[in-house]
Length: 455
Ligand code: UD1
Ligand code: MG
Image (cartoon, rainbow, N blue to C red; front, top):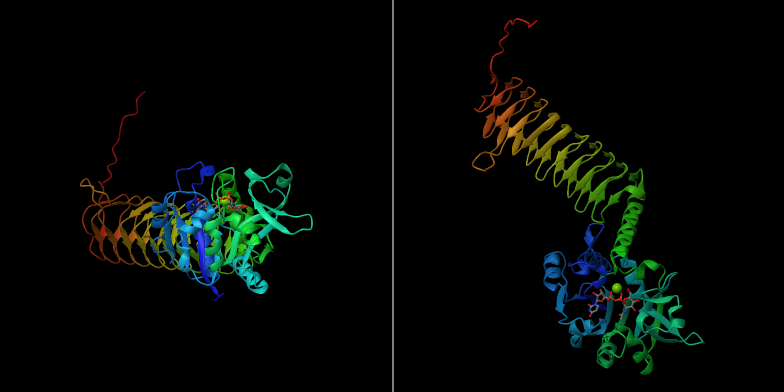
């Protein structure tokens, strides 16, 4: 791929058919925007100079990609068509081979990009575009050929005759072209068409007219032409990306019980022999180790899960960390900046927020721990609550040591420190620090009174 100097990604279009305020290329499929999918595959193909043409919602697009890609941005002031968009990418200085693609094709893989370049190199042509045969060509540019099969032009749907509309070979929108050829032909593109736009597809008849060598590279898979222009196509692209991710994981030894009802984003890593139950949603930025059991209907987002972790039914883990051998759930909620130590147990209806639970400690039932630190081998009884939010609307910490036994139905009115080895009696409302090794009882004494039953 070293002879590909530049890729130009067209991402300035309005995306009117999405019926959304959001720029089209920022719509997400499987946890990444459409444009991020394209850029990551281009980088994967070894193309380092990437020019992205932005326009509609351009500032938003730039901000979204800030720090995430090394792409350069070029602004197309008015969306006058795909040829005009390429011109906006300052092509006069381009040398060598240029790859041009759409920013709304999230399913194209690095191999597809590589293949197009390989075909371009092998055929030693001036311009190559990739076509595909599809069952339903509606909406695409059709590849018009002479009776003898010679290439004539690409005709956009709106400009096509009814006979041309029946053509099932379509333009995928992926081109490879010599820089000089682009510089020579692009200024000649007019806008004499139904949309009064400058179409990049007009390069083809112009190149043929000036006796350039034009080659059609036929795509191996229709995924190359699966652009996203409306919400239905977005949903279909997302499904295809989830299927692809599932296949990749299954082939690396992950067990997925019901792939059709499992939603694992592209940017997720899962180790071999981990079992993913039905209905799980595992979102971008998550890593899961080997041999874990992730039961159904769990939702995991940007989390770090170690090896042999048992995550039981319906558990939510959001930007939290769980170390090896821990058991969490069913129906637990780990909120951001929570950390569950090795072999610790977090049980049903337990919520952790910004809380660290030490190795082998147990928080098994109906508990809220917020802004807390719990040491190793501590037991937190059922119904424990940290009262971390005070009337001054500030958050305060609860620090509980090692080997502490917290009886059920305890409230810690933070800030509180509980020393190692302390015992808290059930039903206590703890408002003062508890020294290590002591027993704290903070509840009213039981009084049993006799009473006269009424007749
Ligand atoms: C385009 C092709 C069509 C092809 C199809 C494949 C043209 C004229 N048509 O049609 O032959 O079958 O892709 O999906 O090229 N864009 C800009 N600036 C503009 C207009 C568009 O940057 O002024 C960008 C869009 O953001 C998009 C890409 O170019 O990423 C393609 O534009 P779109 O409107 O989606 O073209 P299609 O109708 O899909
Ligand atoms: Mg399109």
